[in-house]
Length: 116
Length: 111
Image 1 (tube, chains in turn yellow, green):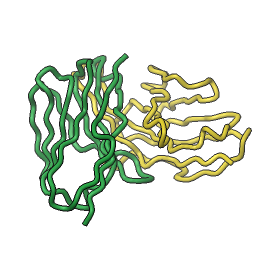
Image 2 (tube, chains in turn red, orange):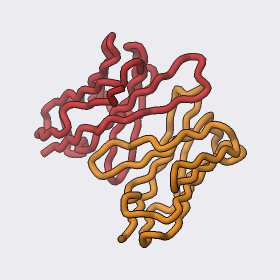
Image 3 (cartoon, rainbow over the protein chains, first blue to last red):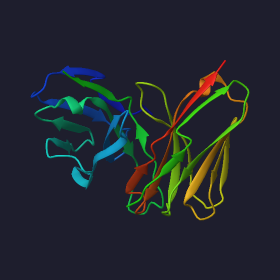
């Protein structure tokens, strides 16, 4: 099975611009989560989508948004970029069902976003 | 709020040494995962532990889940430079719908 893929791998933007990142989960996985990773804050949860619905949301401003398509692929958008948005953005997919007693997340390679 | 702590934050050892890193919480988790992450890459899942007291081995790595499912440890025997990386633990709760990550232990194994 192919792993989680993320595009692009690297991105350079300037303040005020917007950016869209893409994530393709492992085949059969319906849950996709997004994380922001910075040296100072570690891995911080942005949001999770399951069957095209946002199921969980972290503590990030509304400039961060996402969506999930019917094929489980997901996109994340950041509007009005700030210098502090520079980070590694990670996508993780999981095969979660309502009868699951536990769950496992599998991560993509990430998108390195640099805001100048 | 579920929180995970990891210790030590940083660890630098010589090749061939043994080490243990810890993951602790005051909360009970339904499962706990350990990941290793290399610079510029995504975390790679090493193991999932589910049952209290469970011990799993992956070559030179031994993972243990605490009896109360609140803590875990990762022991590496005869560390090698290839073990270098950031080790993250993640606890799963709410029947697997939610995860919380620890801040990580950055391990450096010197040849």
